[in-house]
View 1: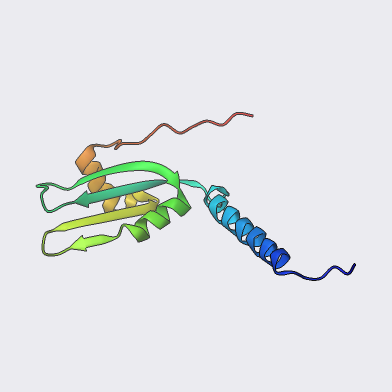
View 2 (view 1 turned 90 degrees about the vertical axis):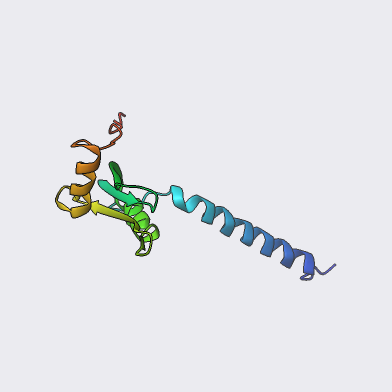
Amino acid sequence: MARGNSIATGLDFRIAAGSLLILLGLGLPFLPVPGDRVTKIAVQFRTAEMAQPAGFTARTKSSICRALAAALAYEDPAGGGYTRIACGHPATSDVAQAAKEVVGAGGIEPPTPTMSR
C-alpha cells in the first residue's frame, strides 16, 4: 500500500503549527528582556474633576515603564486632564518633582523584593 498525502495530515500539521504559535505568543510576556533593569517610574495625573493633580512613584522594569509611558500619554486641553509618566532617573524630571510635591518625599513605593538562591 502506498501512503499518500491526505488532507487530514496537512490539516493536523497546520493545527499543530498554529497551536505552537499561539502558545509561544502567550508565553512571550513572561520571558525576560535582555538588559532590562528595575527603574523608578514617576506618574502625575489629573482629571477634569480634580482640583489638584495627583502623583506617585514606584519601581518597575524599564521596558514596562516605557510601554506605559507610550500607552498612557494623554492630555485634554478642554478639561485640563493629563497623564505624565517619567522613566529612568525621575528624581530630576519635572514629573518626579511634581509627584514629590503632591505625595511627599517618598511617594508610594513598594519595597524592593530580595532574591536569594
